[in-house]
Length: 97
Image 1: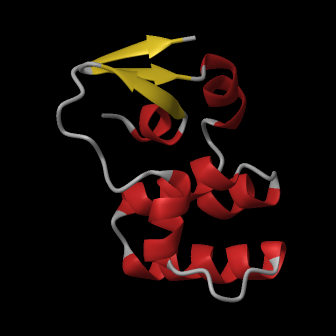
Image 2: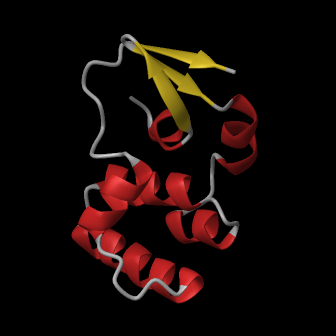
């Protein structure tokens, strides 16, 4: 699954990811921290998770804490909050809506 499809996925229908077409078009080139500054918390978290880089995740969590005031936020608690635990391997198609 491509990065832009993963970060703008709004749900799944079987093996198909349902992706927000407009958000993907507007913010496709945005970095994790740019998405966070734009108030797109879930896509920013998905972007950090997709990179599979602990330093980027740490930078996201730190910036998220400062922006939201949630001092207890961790990568694990944010996974539960946003309902995103990793890049789904069963996805074979993408549906743009």
